[in-house]
Length: 456
Image (cartoon, rainbow, N blue to C red; front, side, top):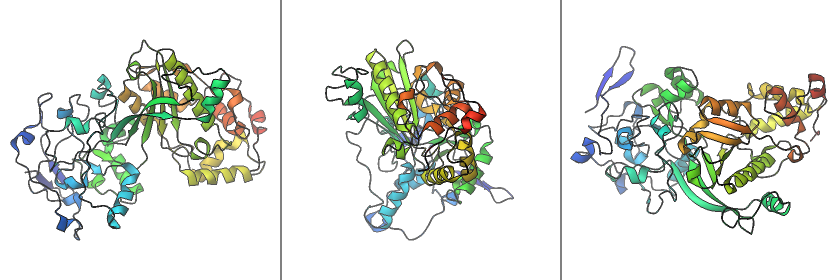
């Protein structure tokens, strides 16, 4: 039974010794069969009482320890965040990121049975990815579960009735259609090959959806802060949403309610981890206004499309291309903040000027950027990337994060001038002046102030 102790300040601690399991062997507590089911019966699907997980009596249930960074999945242990496995949960938070709140609405309104168990038949990855050596380095991957796509296949020795273990990564294949690709074919910039790029201009891709899984000690180390500061601040700045952050120091993994990441792989997946084959990468942070609706105030969609073009060309040359699409709308400040900044930029004295581009963001949000690119290279490590031949990005923050993570970048690819939208010169010149990579001259302060956008 787990041994709890309480110190004089009233904080609860969990004393346990980590289990060391032989490689590829199920833990002893799974082989014994001595566990109890936690599945609610139909008559208990809507319990009225509330159990605070911070002080939950586990009734002798075994909580599987997570040994983050272990290359063997059984030694690492599964991520158990399902509410069907209350006694066995070994993480803070729940599955599905921000969509977990919609699940709560579905349960509250009676349209979803909270005891429903996902039928994962035929949902396994269409193409295997990994494992790669980076999966066994606790410093290289801290914001996702490298075994997340394999959870339904690896941890089959855990009782399906007692342990509800869900994937945090899904991998499939698709054909995607982007209007600009057809234009590029007609212009001779892209060539139809029948395998990667079809005659109808559709593009064949392998894609992966990744939910965030944060290893808190690793996140803290990556951001150069101590773990307690991270836990306390996450608790406070989410309005106390997750008390386990400050009351359960034994739980080191957090499933945050934020957007995830989607990876689009063009070409041979096996080429990604082979440094002798060319690789192109575009890391793109979500911009709904441009990416979806074509707003011309920024370069987001045209740069994304150019990244796809470079990825296709690289794949056709015998390598692969990767588009990493991160849900970090408005530099992770959010779309409401972004639109407020748009108004402030357009209405300020002197109009929308490149020299005041970042200043207006700071005035509204307090910071220029909250994307924390330090966490971004994790997905590259998950894919096994060690070298990028063509990085389609001008961002110094992304470049520094990638190279500081030990990944070699051979060439940086800026957006071509002819792809910069009419009202986006303010953005691009401001970014170049702030340190973004460019093959053009950087404007002096006086000239920068003369770069202006439309009123609206």
